[in-house]
Amino acid sequence: VGAYFESLGPTTVEGANLLATVGGILSLPSLVSYAHGGNGGPSDVRLEASGEGGVLDLPALTTITGPNSDWESLLIQALGGGRVNLRAVTQIVGPPGYGGGLRGTQILAEGAGSVVDLSGLTDFLDSGNRPSSPLQFKDGGQVLAGNLTTIIGLSLRAGPGQVLSLPSLRSFEHSAYAGAGDVYLSAEGPGSVLDLPALTTITGPNGDWENLYIQALGGGRVNLRAVTQIVGPPGYGG
Image 1 (tube, helix red, strand yellow):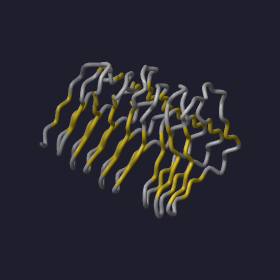
Image 2: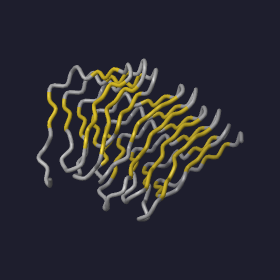
Image 3: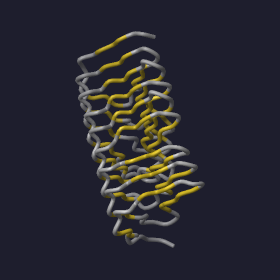
């Protein structure tokens, strides 16, 4: 609590939890690449700041790679007033994997003053099987991702009273992998808004037992006014 830790190395990290708690600052100014790593079994790895004054600062990080096998998650989280600074990250990728279990990169800001800063992010590309990759904020939290232009496999869900706006997003794809499961573009509950004013192309699933849900529920609103094309690519199976 209240501690500050800064390390000038390393430049690459794989499979390590990076956690900052109440009043603590963890800064790795030389880190440029971070990967979940994956070990072929259930495993969550976290980039997290929790509690008032908790800061995880990774100012030079440009690339994040999610898990590559089943039942694994990379959790990027700001909780209870924490802040995660990933402002130089331009790409989050989920590499091709194997099996039928869920896996993905989950982005969450929960609680007043909680911020995940991904303001430099342009591409979220989860190319794996069955991605479980939502972007969410709750109870006054913020996810800053205004420069995101291309999405594959990331669910966008706004809850009651929330406005999720990605003004630069132009292309959204369910998944690059057949067998990926369900992905959502949704606004759920009174006052909820999902606003994607520059989105022009939506590509649906390409395999069996997959769905892309575009839904406004319980007073929600989904703004896709610039979309000119929704396509379902050729798939396989029955």
